[in-house]
Figure 1 (tube, rainbow, N blue to C red):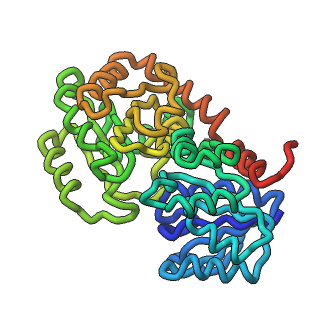
Figure 2: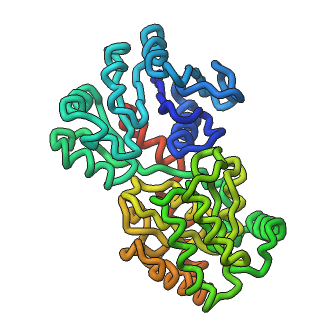
Figure 3: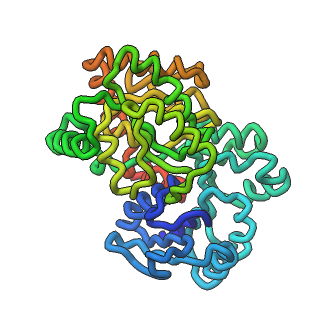
Amino acid sequence: MKIAMIATEKLPVPPIRGGATQIYLDATAAIMARKHDVTVLSIRDRDLPDVEKNKNGVSYRRFSQETYIQEVANHLRTETYDVIHVCNRPRWIRHIREASPDSALVLSIHNEMFRDDKISYAEGVDCINAVKQIVTVSDYIKMTICDRFPQAIGKVATVYSGVDVETFQPKWTAQGEKIYAAIRRELGLEGRKVVLFVGRLSKVKGAHLLLEALPSIIKKHPEAVIVFVGSKWFGDNEVNSYVRYLYTLGAMYENNAMFIQFVKPEQIPQLYTMADLFVCPSQWQEPLARVHYEAMAAGLPIITSNRGGNPEVIENGKNGYIVKDFSNPEAYAALINKLFDEPSSSIQMGKYGRQKVEREFNWEVVAAKLLRAYGEERG
């Protein structure tokens, strides 16, 4: 098959600036390219050429961010593809169908893109009629489409995202043990109990709840430290009012809170390895944050909020805990203390999560499911 994968207009592919959908497209494209002709379309970036073919056999074409969809459509008028995979932009389907009327269209949805404030009912129906398949990153996102558009039910399927399990090393492996010691030494965290948060520093991500939980954590575990990895936006270390609030609150516990601003995607796995547990305190209806896959791959037990699709990858008590009282800092503190109190149980949960991600959420599994959505026969 000749396949085009169309990224959004936000960030480039490969994901040199981060971005969950960019990681998803780049990883699955590399696997598909073993058997198929794959081209990824994305926006230009100063550090990437406009046209290239990488060592995995994936071709890339990059266009201006300002006129992106128009340039993509122009490309599709001159290049024929069997399948066009459109990422997270249902309103683009009309333009793409007009530009490439004979291609099979597959739409992957990573956010609530079928809400009434995102797309009109008429546009939604037209989109659903035009595509062959819609794949969603969680059952929660699937529900948001089918509740409003029942006619989509037969076309929508959940295909969970994935992670490169080789990139993440749990601390109990030989390589992980070395990383664990080196990063902790570099950060001055030797002998500490480390809680990790990775994500944008925005109120909906709930970082403030972990800082508000600190007094109850420190009371039982004075050696505990929460490490926050992230900034207000991908690659942007500008400080806004919320980030300033976090820094001010964190300064009250300077020995127990650490902030690491945006780091390159390739540096993230080591930070997971050096942690003891991972917390995702999201307050919004998260589609399903990819940090869950990364934490499992690193062998960390997970504490996550009961919001959106996040609980779908957690088997409560086996690879982590789901916080139903998700806006209460003390609910997070209680579970963090529980995991710190039971280190052997914490390790077992981390190992179960690692096995789960190897089995269910590696990129080979994700790519195979996408190819079936494209029309490739099983086997």
